[in-house]
Every structure is written in structure tokens, then in C-alpha cells.
Length: 620
Image (cartoon, rainbow, N blue to C red):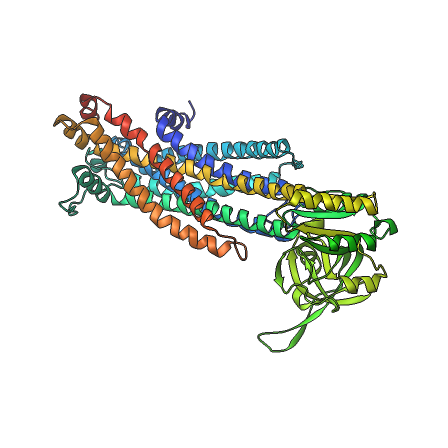
């Protein structure tokens, strides 16, 4: 028989303890594996900004969110493992006392339980990796089912190995201390039925006289086992911090990023352009939620230009706003700028001479209908050489875009702002329409954006279609709501997937709470048995234990949620969109998490209360 057969048999004999520990650590590892693999497949790796899907600005927001959540998950996993090993060793003290009483040396006892820890840790990390990979494949399949085609990348072996090693090392480090502490307990104390590792029995705490009988017992028991109570509160507070950051941050970031996309494209916006130009514009918008192949397209074809008669007739229609634009594609080059060094007060040059291709859009700043989220200043006057660049172009070509210049068609433009815009996946440059017409020699726009400001939208829309068909039947009237919903829907799917991440930690925390309740019941079994013998009803026992769980949960909730909110505000996107509905939604989800954990903790109490009195009293 091998040296590991005894530890394996011992673990199998204690199915509840082993199962809770393995399940908790497995969920933490699976969550981390899924988080990183899902990020790579969706297109916002933590290590770098992906090309071809999601603009750089949105990708950075997702990456920062995932990085922060990932760090919290690792911390939460370490705390959960530490507590579960503590619970496991608390119930093994008598076994160790008997082993030491029979002459078994400490190093052999330590090796015995260390083998158990290594087995549990290895199995948990292995299962966590497997479930994390399966969850990633399932999520990508779900996205494909909903219409968003995402390429499943090969599993990054080195990344998986790193996660496995990280959690294995953390579990061993945090699990060794309880084993060392328990193996040092004196045999006589360990065998004593009144001794429980980590559960002190010092008197001295009194509850106010107005407290109910069950509350008195609950509070006295919590204060009597201070070590275990503090550990579980810290563990659950960490989980509630993670849940708060994920839920609050996820909901607010979801609404904020959707608001950016909606304002950039425009709700109920209408595009009027040649049918080929219209199809190309829709393709440019779709690059935000899926990598599209760049096809050669000549934006300056004469037939694509909007007839002046059509533009004049559109301006005569009441209750609409007209935004004429010229869209071309051109070569752009970064021009270095100068900044003042804050330490030496000297002028230093920033930037390089990077080059690339960009979509160039000429707009009339005073008539533009889009409301981009802009870092810096938006375009103001139509005759100045100023430009606002998309965040993907700014990330790829500039060091400090707001302190640099951009060369377009041999003209140098001052970069005044960086905007969040999904068109062409953020690789776009906005300049005044008059300036672009002068430098290109193209004197007519090739697309017209229209917004209807009338309650009779259908009638006005029909009038617009009639006008367009009367001038040129090759031009089309296209409502951009379809493209908008696709982009917003993609963001919604991504954020909703990420918001399910705390569910794994919530389940792991519920298992920890169940382990704590089992430990508390074991320590109170004789006391509760005597109360049952004196006539206390089973439901009173259940109420007493449930009140202990509720006090622990409430303490953790009060400690973890404010920390999570503070951290959320620190990592949120700029100018977050927060409404009263948002606050109610966040509060509702947090309360649901609290209720779910409390209900899950009732199972051990209900099971114990149903046991016969003799079975409780005869338990060694």
C-alpha cells in the first residue's frame, strides 16, 4: 500500500469537508481561467490591445476592468483556501491528539496532513483549469448562437500553467499555517471534548437584557469563537468586495459604454447615401463588434457625391436636422509636438513620425448631430486646421495626441481631441468640412445624416424617401438603429458575461459559510442537545444558528460593500452614467447575493435540528 493511500482514504471518509474545500478552490481557479481565455477570444487581452474588434479605448476599459477583477479573484481565492483549510484542520484536532498520544512524531503528522493538502490542492487546480476551459468554449458558442461570430483561439498553454502554479502555490502557502498550528497542540488538550482549534471559550461578553433568547445565544457563540468568526467575516467581506466591484462596475460601465456608442452613432439617425456608399458605411460600423476584411473602396467616385439639389430639398423639409459629411480615406502621419517638463521646466519633444491609413470625415462642427465622448476639445470652427481623432488611431500613432499634430493631405492639423467612436473601429479622423473640401478638391458631401424632430416620424420619413427617390433612385435612406443595436447588443453580451463572474466566487463563499456553520454546530452540539432535552423546539435551534449566520453575513456585507463601491469609483470609466435606476439595480443584485448566501447557510442548521436528541448527545 502506498504512503498516500491513508490520506486519500481519510479524505474520502470526510466527504463534506473535502467536497467543500475542493469545490471552493475549483471555482476560484475556473473563474480565473475563464476570465483570461474569454478576454483573449473577445478581443481585449490584458497584456495588449487587440486589433480588428473593439476600439482601443473600449478595449482598454475592458482590460482594466478584467485586470482589477482578476486581482480580486486571486485574493479572494487565497482567503477562501485559507479559511477552508482552517475549517478542515479544526475538525481534525482530535485525530491529531490521538496520533500524538500513541507516539506518532510531529514531522510524520505534518507530512500526513501536508499530503492531504497537496492532494486537495492539485485536484482542485486541475478541475478548475478543466472547468474554466469548458466555460470559455461554452461562452463563445453562446455568442455564436446569438449572432456574434467570434473565433475560438487555441488555448494558451503557458497562461493556463501560470494560473495553475499560482493558485497551487497560494493554496499551499495559506494552507500550511493551520496544519503547523494544529500539530503543535498538546495531546491532552487535543483529545478534550471541550477544546476546538480556533474556538475560544472565554466568558465575559454579555448581551443587553432586551435581546431575545436566541439572539443572546447567537451573539455569545460568535464572541466565544472569535478566531473563526473573524476569519469568516474577512473571507465573506472579500467576496462581497469582489461582487460589488463586478456588479456595480459592470452595470455602470455597461450603461456608460453603451451611451458612448449610442451618442456617437445617434439614436433614430437616418443615413442618406448612394447604395454602395450606404453599404460601406454599415460595414464600417460593424467592424466594432467583428473583425471585417478591409476591401478596396473608392469614396470619391463622382456618382457617390450627394447632388446639391437633393441637399437643398432636404433642408426645406420641416422638423429635421441635416448633417452633411464628406468621407474619404487617406494617409496620415504623426507630427511631433512639444511639452514642458514639470521637473526641469525645459521644452521636450514628444512623438515620432509614425504613419498609417485612416478614415477622414469632414463635418460642419456647428451642425454635427453626433455627440462623441471627447477627451480634450471638440471641433469648433469650420475653417481652422483642427482635428479630432478616434481613440484607436490615437493609441496606435501618438504618444501624447493632445500635444501633437497630424498631417493629412500635406496639411498639418492640430489635434484638439480624442473621441470614442465605433466607426471603422475607432480608426477615424474628424476635420472641418470646408477644410477637407479645400485640400481634396471634392466640393460635395457623399453622405447626409438626418435626425427627425417630429412626433410624426413615419410621415416625415416617407417624405424623405420620396424626396430622395425623386432626385436619384440610386440613393438609399437607411435607418442606423439596426447598426446601433448590433453594437450596443455586443457590448451588452460582453458585460453581462463578465457580470456573471462573481457568481463563481459567490458559490465558493456560500460553501465557506456552510463550512463555518458546520464548524459552529460541531462546537455547540452538546449545548444545543441539552437545550433540546430541556424542551427547546427544533425550529428554535434552527433560528439560533441562522441568526449567527445572518450576523456574520451582515457584518461582512457592511464591511465589503463600501470598500467595493470605493474601488469601483476609482476604476470606473471617465464620466460614468449613473441614474436612479442604476442605483436600484445595483442594490437589488447585492441584496439578492446576500439572500442567496443566507439561504444556503440554513441547510446544516436544518439538518442538525432534525437529528434525534440521543444522536446529538452521544456524538463524541
